[in-house]
Image 1 (cartoon, chains in turn red, orange, green, brown):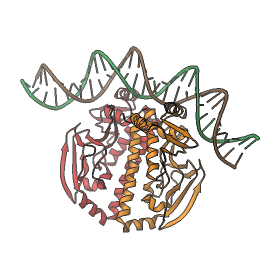
Image 2 (cartoon, chains in turn red, green, yellow, purple):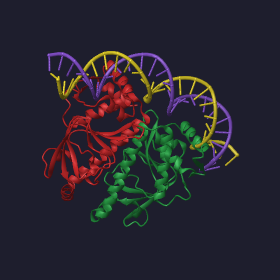
Image 3 (cartoon, rainbow over the protein chains, first blue to last red):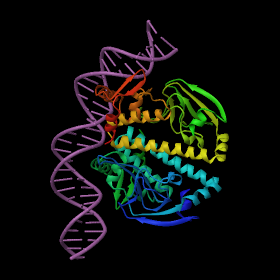
Length: 212
Length: 212
DNA sequence: CGATTGTTTGATGAAAGTCAAGTACCGTGG
DNA sequence: CCACGGTACTTGACTTTCATCAAACAATCG
């Protein structure tokens, strides 16, 4: 679904940009359009009263921030820009009318909504039953897959703008510990990170780490 | 949505029962009807290659096993009966036709699907950033809320069939540790569990534990 | 009523957290 | 172009939370 709107917008309304580390939306505030991210990464974030935070997921370019915004007019979590974010806002009523006329588009909306749920379920499994190493390895592989789907992986190398705090808050770890894991990955020649670009040096060994 | 189908079924197909601890569905196997649980609790479960398991959620009576089965014809996780489960199977095509005619029902389907996603997000936050005590307390309060919605809570007391292993596998803990937490809850006169019935003795103190 | 399944308790250990201090990096303005 | 402030990364010493393992006991269920 999203590619359609990310590129040639039939019912586009207007674009907006948000700088890195700035909020895109605040939890609870009304969202009167349906946003699709065109450029940059965003994080869906929950802040807890004790100051900790949990990242519920990331949106990569070409995706809805969340498919539920087609139906719902507010979000229960904050959305923050990881990199500078450019997103397009679609008129909700117009979008829903378009959907009503196109069963094909509905299928695709349903599909991205199911995919969202599946990513959430995978994250639950990670947080509940996998150790830090596996969580980090899986995050990397998942990011690679999602980027590959948009043809943004060349030579096992792709843009990876997440800070170690993002990884930590997404995986229920601390930045200090994520650092240790990444350092050990580098020493083992599994990956390399330079200039916000991540290169997977040994894909099969990384996949092996992830199974089990 | 579900209450409609759990009670007076316009397009009911047939009922099935499954004994406690038995599988309801296997991951990947085709599901050619849309199941709604009428009696009993079920768990959605993922088994990992290392023998651990993670429970992704529970269905209480009157709910879809998962709303995504209205669209999708298979599940990516096992479903297991916690108690004996009685569920009704609806014809997917007929159900979708009914939906096409009733925007009201669609709204309700969307709502339960969003609720499912919200529960998943809450669980992510629990597993990522809350400690065992809070996780257990929140599970109890959530169960109470869901049962209350079906008028199954009397005097802060309700049917609670989960074994400690279920709680552990749902919250990313071990049964031994869940036992310690529950024991401490009982000693603190927060709750009582007897005969598969859970009574909340001090709701406000339990809520206090959960915030923060 | 025996067998399976679930609960309780304790001793021990490991994974990951906390805290702290130092270094590197980066964008902005003088 | 350099200095500066903020952000990000790295490392190490120490602590906490929870896991692991084991064994005994209790409850349930054919």
